[in-house]
Length: 269
Image (tube, rainbow, N blue to C red; front, side, top):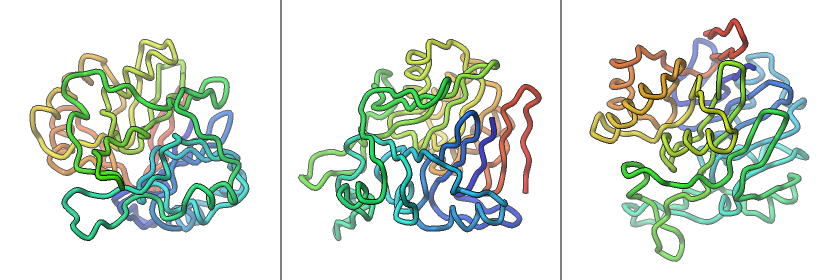
């Protein structure tokens, strides 16, 4: 299985970056996981000689602009997401109430895609799972939120989801932003797939500081003996540094290709 980084926050040698996330997952099926906030994922794919016309399924991790605004550049593909992915949402601190949801509504999305909305886990292929709505069970993640919905109620981004892939080495988990808590996501992936071993985790961990929460997440990763760890996108520099100090991680950049086959490796562009 390969994961090509089409969009993330840091540029590669030949590829551009934006605040957003879009990964191409290639295994027994090809899945486009998120589309970033512009058409940059398409331009980077072209530079990497990747033909996204061969992708049948798009999975949206959640309904924020930096993960789904690129949808308007695609047509006639299967799209899988949570039912709340298309609501309007805002930052509490933003007095102008700028919508940070996706710029196209559900009606428009249905005209462009073969849309499936689901809260429960969904089997995408023989060993790839869309996790659906993630239960928030531990006592340190996803306890506060800086977002509100259009009715002014707290928005805990309940549509936040992830992908789990069963491999011989263990689970590979791909997170969009980790609003549900990356440890909650991993635990739910283990439950849904009935796989105890986690081999790799990549994507947004939604950690901002080198604080007690980040330390608990690091201790959890150590207890799970996770071999390949790639915090990316919304993982802020202080938290990233804490992971580097503990695990010696490599920074994820656009254009990178992560290989998770038996002789796994990472290729940097």
